[in-house]
Amino acid sequence: MTSPRPAISDPPSLVDTEIHGLRANAVQALVDQLNNAGPLDDRDRAMLKRLSDLQAVAAVREAYHREAVVVERAIASAAHRNLMSQLRQSAEAKLRRRLQDKHEKVAREQESRKRWGKRKREELKGKLERSLSKHRSRTFDLSTENNIEDATAAQQLQEKTICLLREVVQEAAQVAARRIRDAEEQAEWLREQAAHAAEQELRLEQIRQDHRERLARLEAQRQQEAEMRTRWDTLCEERARRAEVDAQIARLAREAADKARHAREAQAAARRAKEAVLRATQAQAAQRAQQDASFLKAWEAGLRARAAAEEIRRGRDPEVIHRVRMAEAAARRAREEEAARRAREEEVARRAREEEAARRAREEEAARRAREEEASWRAQSAQEPPHQDTSQQILRFCEVYELKWIELKTSQNLDHSVGFHEFPFPAFIYPVNDPAEISYERVREFLFYPVRPGVENKTRKELLKIEILRWHPDRFDSLIAPRMKEEDWPKTKQAAGTVARCITRLMAEC
Image 1: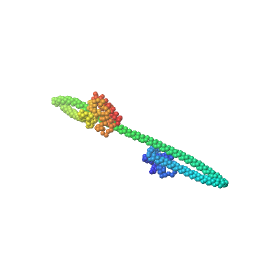
Image 2: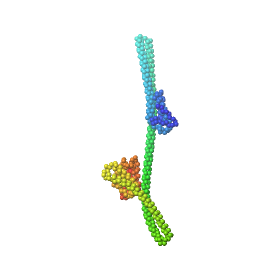
Image 3: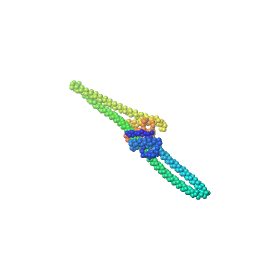
Image 4: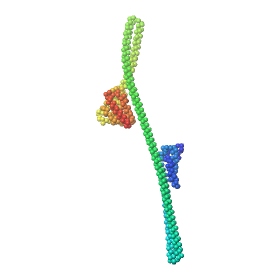
């Protein structure tokens, strides 16, 4: 089927099963051979038409794709190989037919010459036999009649017969020479045809070799392009994964920063509450001092008032009476102001005490829950062997692990009070008596436990990033050291280093 000629303004869009490019010099020998073979049949004309269409398409494709990047894949496709195979088979079949026709023609000519020579030899032999028979009969007659004239005539006839025999021999020699020349010419023609056929075969083989080399180059280029595309896809995927990991690290860093900020805010709030309590205590002390001073002033004023009253009672002086009344009014105003100030200070102290009590209640509730979970886990662990732990017990163990870490991060009442046996390590053993009990297999089993709370919809890398934020040596030392008992801190730090190395190894394996 003939492909339409694409427009010059837009590169043709061919599917992978069509030929993208076909150079004229690659098949010109086949085209010349078909054209020189004589009249073309329908099959040859169809092939030449298809070849012409493909050459037109190839010219357009070559104009747009000088590097033959798109063209090369289709040249190596099955359609082009079938086309070249058909052209080669057609040319070889036509050449074989021509050689066979030539051989048959030569054989027919040789057979015709043989029949003609045989017929001529038989005719000459018949003439010779008839002449000899006639000569014998005449010789016999002459010998019988003793006729000298007839003998002379017979002798002349014999001479004529000898001449005729010479002519026959000469003609036979000429026929033999002509036959030899024809055989030599036929042999020379056959040699020329064989040389021509060998030359044609060499040309066809060279064309096939060039075609195979071109296909090999195109296949190598296609493989190189595929490898480059694969490397590019791999690079894009790696970049996407790195971007995702960077985003996750950034998100974890933000979360860690938020948690640290919340912890700092909680510490600042606790510090402010302590400062408020201290200020309230100081205010109460100052208030008591002021009360004592006011009491002394009021007592002195009362003494002065009583003395003035005694003087008034004795002397009845109006000016003294006025001074006494002014002193009493000033003392009353001082008592009222002191009562209002004391009420305000008591209100501030009461609010500070309520906030501190609420904060302590929250911390005590979280600690109580952790202790209850730990006590429940201890009780069940004591009742059943470790190898008979149920999924519910393991889930409770994981919850205790998370609650203890929350308490370690948020509680302000754990100054040097946590022991090594109470510390939450990522392993299904409780209590941990020695850092050597923490191994890579136990840490891996705990962190990647399938139904562990809080691991839903999270990959292993995400879980490991969360854990490395807990067990990183610098963060661990700054957060946990103030909360551990001094005698248990070296063992705790050693065990934490083992856990951090296990997590680092797991991250390298993921």
